[in-house]
Image 1 (cartoon, rainbow, N blue to C red):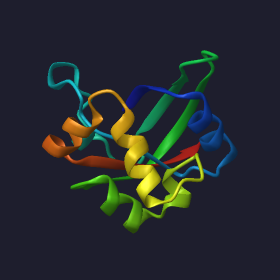
Image 2 (cartoon, helix red, strand yellow; image 1 turned 45 degrees about the horizontal axis):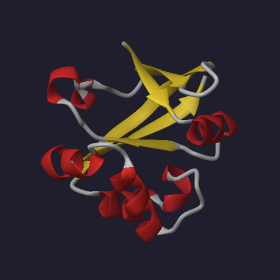
Image 3 (cartoon, helix red, strand yellow; image 1 turned 30 degrees about the vertical axis):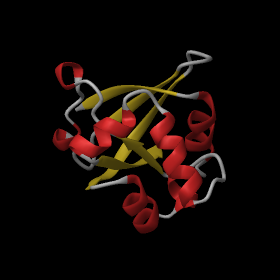
Image 4 (tube, rainbow, N blue to C red; image 1 turned 60 degrees about the vertical axis):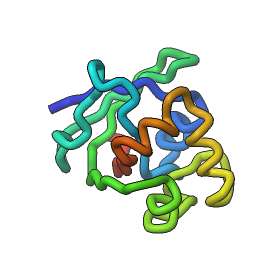
Length: 118
């Protein structure tokens, strides 16, 4: 199965370069929610750069659900999840700054999607 996700410019290029290995996502709108629980290893993700429009296909290596951003960053490592070079506290603030992410994470948790560019 293939899934399409829009992604910001910096993380797009970090995934493409292989320095960002995990994409963190939560459900923000239940009626339009991509069901991350249905993703499995071997599925593909097509990332759409929301600035340039470039597309990149990645293989899903794993998907894990965490109760909060801190736990995800501690377990998976900030260097694998963040493209910004922030520490754990900065990463938490960054995720919470995305529209509806703070509430989505409280309600649904956060998914760490391990990816590798194909």
